[in-house]
Amino acid sequence: MAVETGQSVAKAAGAPSARGHGRRTDNTPGGTGRPGTQPGRLRRALSTHWYAWSMVAPVVTVIGVIIGYPLLRGVYLSLTDANEANVERTIGVNHIPATYEFVGLDNYRAILTDNVFWDRLGWTVVWTVTCVALSFSLGLVLANMLNRKIKGRGFYRMALILPWAVPAFVSVFTWKLLFNERSGLFNQLLAGGGIDGISWLNDPTWAKVSVIAVNIWLGVPFMLVAMLGGLQSIPGELYEAAEMDGASAWQRFRHITLPGLRPVASTVILLSAIWTFNMFPVIFLLTRGGPGDATEILVTYAYRLSFVVSPRDFAGSAAWGVLILALLSLFAVVYRRALKKQGDMW
Amino acid sequence: MVSTDTQTRRRGRGERSPLASAGLHLTLLIATVVAVFPPLWLVVTSFKPTTDAFDTSLVKNFTFGNYSHVLADTRFLAWLGNSLLVVGLTTVIGVFISATTGYAVSRFRFPGLRPLMWMLLITQMFPVAVLIVPLYNLLASLGLLNQPVGLVITYLTIAVPFCAWMMKGYFDGIPAEIDEAGRVDGLTPFGTFWRLIMPLAKPGLAVTAFYSFITGWAEVAYASAFMTGEENLTLSGGLQTFVNQYTADWGSLTAAAVLIAAPAALVFGFVQRHLVSGLTAGATKS
Image (tube, rainbow over all chains, first blue to last red; front, top):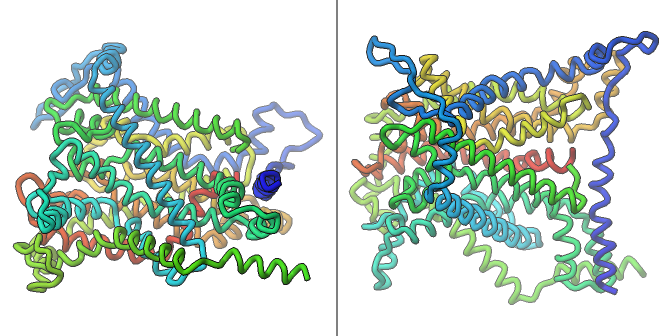
C-alpha cells in the first residue's frame, strides 16, 4: 500500500516540470515571410530567423575565433613534433621560422602505449569520483538538515557556504599553511597528542588524501546550496499526502525527496564532475602534482609538459589536451543519454 | 474535521525528540567548524608577525605589520590593478555579448539552436590543456604575452559560454507574455529585448557578471603561464611569489590573501542566493 502511494506521489512530483517544459515550445515569432510569394528556402529562413541569428552572432564569432581557431590549431599541433626548440620564435632581432613536421598519429600512439597516461587517467578517475561522490553526499545530508525547522538556520547556512565565497586559490594557500610539515597546525596538534607528524603533502598517499580533502571542502557548499534549492522546490503537499497514507520517513525520502531532486542533481553532478576532472588550481598550487607525479591529474600533467619540463613539449601537451576533451565529451554524451533513457528530457 | 487532522499530522512531521535535535545541532556545528576554520585561521595568521606564523596561539603580538608591508613594500597594488583591469574588461564584454545570445536561445526556435546549445555546454568543459598551448603561441605571435589584453581575450573563452548559459536560465524565468505584449505594441524584436527584457533581467545580469568576475579573479593556470615578470602578474600569480620553493613569507601571504578574499566574500554574501538557481535553471527549464 505504502509503496503504491510512493509511486503515485513520485509521478506527481514530475508533473509540474513536464508542464513547464511544454510551455514554450512553439514560441517562434514568425510572420515576417509573405505568404503569397514563394521565396527560396534560405531566404525564407533568413527573413524568419534573421534577428535570432544576428543576436547569437557575437557569441558564435567569439567562440569561433578565440576557441575554434586555437582548438583546430591544438589538434594540428598534436599531429606534429612541435616543441620549444623548433616552433616559430624571435630571439633578439633574429626571427627563426618553425621547423616542426607533421608526424601523423605518432604522439597519440606514444601516449596510449605509455603507462604514464593510464596511471594518470586512473588517478584522475579516482579523484573525480571520490570528490564528486563525497561532496554530493555531504551536500545532500547537510541540505536535508538545513531544510528543517531548526534554530540558527541562517547562521549555519552562511557558515557552511563560506568556503565557496573565498576565492579557491586563497583557500588552497590556507590549507597549505595548515598542512605544513614542520610546523603546520595539524602536525602541531598531532605532536600535542604525542603522535608523529604526517608529511601531508610529501607522502604520495597522504598527498592524495590531502588534495581530495581540500577539494571536497571547496565543493560541498555548491552542492549544499543547489540541493537546498532543489528541496525547497518540492511542494510540501506531497509530504502531507504521503504522510496521510502512512508513508514512513524513509519512504518519504526515497519516493518524494530523491525523485524531486533528480533534475537539479543530474545537472549539478554533471557540472561538478567536469569541473573536478579539470580542477587545475587545487593540485597545481597545493602539491604541484608532487611528490614525483603522485597527485598529477591529466590536466596538470598536460600543463607540466608544455610549461614546466624542458624542452617544452607542445605537441605532446596538445595531444594530451585532445584526449582529455575526447574523454569528457564521451562522458557528457553517455551521461545525457542515460538520463534521457530514464525520461529526463533536455 | 479534515483540516484539524492534517494540522496535527503536519506538526507531527516537524516534531523531533530532544535527542534527535541535539544530534542535528551537533552535526551542523561540526560541519560549521570545518567550513569556517581555515578562513578564520587565515585571518588570525595575518595579524601575527611573520616569525610567529605557525604559532598556535590565537592572539599574541597582534600586529598590522603584514598589511602595511604588503601594501607599501610589495607589488600588491600593481597586481590588484592588473586583476581589476583584466577581469573588469572580461566581465563587461562577456556579459554584454552573452546577454543577446541567452535571449535568442531562450525565446526563439531557429535552425542551429541545438548545435549552439551543445557548443555552449561543451566549451564549458574544455580543459585548460587543449587551448593553453595554441593560445600561448597565438598571443606570442601577436605580441600580447604579458599584456592585460591577452589575458582578457583568454578569459573570454571561459566567460562567454558560461555567461550565455546563465543568461538563458534567467530569460527563461521571464514570462514570454511580456515579449508578446511588446510585439503587439509595435516594438521590434531588438526593441523588446533592449527596452523590456533587459531591465527585467538586471538581477540576473548582476549575478552573471559577478560569477564571471569571480571566475577570472580566481583563475590560476592561464595567468601563471601567460604573465611573467613581477609587475605584470595578476593576484593569483602574485600570491604565488610569497611562498614557493625559495621563500616562505607567510605573513605577507596571509595578509594579501585576506585583502583579496574579503571584498569577494562580501559581495558573494549578497548574490549567493541567486547563483545556483541561475546555473541549474538553464538545464531544467529548457
